[in-house]
Length: 210
Image (tube, rainbow, N blue to C red; front, side):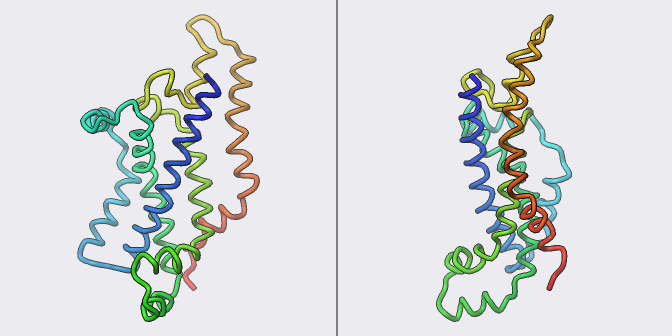
C-alpha cells in the first residue's frame, strides 16, 4: 500500500504543479500587463482565495455533480484551486519587474500573445517557477486533509494517509509508524536542500522593483 500511495502522491503532485505553474504564470502576466475594469475584482478573488477557508461539503457536491469525486483528476483540480492564489501573487509581483519594452519589441517582431508569453516572458520567470514548483510540490505531497475528504478508498491512498495503517484503537506499531514518517519526509527534504537558495530568490524577486 505504501508503494501505491507513493505512486498516487507522485501522479497528483506532478499533475497539479504542472497545471499550477502554467495557469498561475499566465494569470499573473495578464493581470499585470493587461489591466481592465475587471482587474480589481479578479485581484479581490485572488486575495479571497488566501483568506476564505475552503468549504468541504459544497466542494464534494460539485465533484459528485461533475463525476470527479474519488478520482485523482478531481483531487488534482482541488489542489490547483487551493494553490492558485499564492502562485498568482508570486508571478504577478515578478512580472512587474520585467520591462514592458521586451513585450513591445516582441510584438514589433511579429510575436503573438502565446509566443510572447512562452518564448519571451516565461523563460525570464525561471526563479519564480522553481519556487512555485518546490513550495507547491511539498505542500501537495504532504497534504493530508484534501485526500482524506475528496479521495477516499484504499486504492486511492496517498502517503500521508498511510500513517493510519500502523495505528489502531488499542495499539500503535511505533517502529513502522516512524519508518513511514521517515520515508515520507525524505523527498521534500531533498528538494529543500537542493533548491533552498532558489526558493528565497523566487520569493523575494518581486519585492524590489528595479
